[in-house]
Image 1: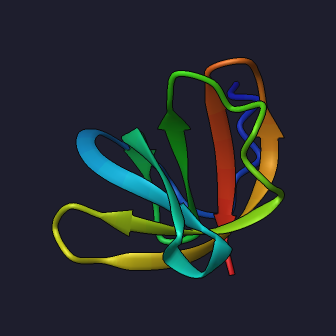
Image 2 (image 1 turned 180 degrees about the vertical axis):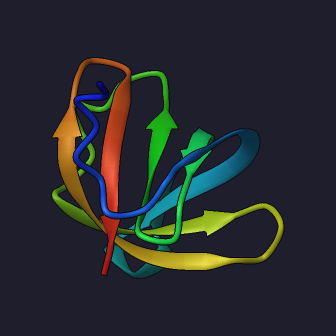
Length: 81
């Protein structure tokens, strides 16, 4: 039995994205490792300087307002707002 408590199933992916903060004046490259209707897992060089809320701009043109659900040194799990 799965311990996964997410509302929506996530699909593995490997898409480029950018974390956008400070009204677009600061950005951080990231890789979207999995994606669902309600959130995503992002991989980046360091998650320590990323604020609790930010915009995610995917290279395919989609944009999401996000808040951090969990983080470790190089990954962030986010909920879409």
